[in-house]
Image (cartoon, rainbow, N blue to C red; front, side, top):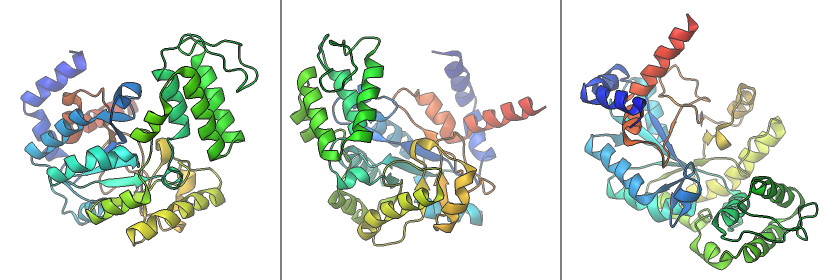
Length: 342
């Protein structure tokens, strides 16, 4: 056990976590998840996918400790009105992976929880594996040691070790080539050919949908079950240009609002990348809140376009999770910031 975990464990059993939840009363914790593992995704990208077992463990702990989940709309209203409960929180899930419907939603519903699901819509419409993730997964999954790829992308070495030191550079070159030079159909053709050469079962990968997003019917099903669908841009990017920002939000809304049958006004920054320069255009577009990936809990003084969240990962120890939810970690960060400011 690390020194940090020892300190946190001592604080928990000394009653400090419980005190922290009182000291941060009236503040809003927002938890963040992405995808969930249908097979081995949590081993492939533990910062992006979580196993079903661990997610259920987290949610059962919240239930056992008396936490209540709220929609983002209701939570923001309660916080502004001073009516937020000490154990009220929001669960957010980014991107819109198929595993949200297959794994997370049944667990949440079984415990009487809800979530706000931020959906990026390009792969809702183009129901293929996410190209970038797919290519990285193929290189991760292969057991081949040498493979010929230079006929697919000129400029590569004649024979490449998919597990070698240069593999990351090769993968990135394929991703950049596909995203800038090919259309969606051509990208899938390239991924299929790479899978063949790397001896990874591409048909099984596609049929499992483990790197796919939910389709429109599945999103509609979540709406019918009371889950809150919100904005995450269409192409999973928030450009610096105001016109392009408007386009991303408009294209995202054009797909999601007919499904939800209401105006959507909460946004999650793709990859957590944000800038104050975009706030004026977000406000003009009717956005009420925008969530970041910056750690912390939110107070009525938190700028609505810089809402903080705790990103829960496969590798996060349970004691760290509890520290974040209770507000103890947030208080430590505040104390550190005050110390550094002196």
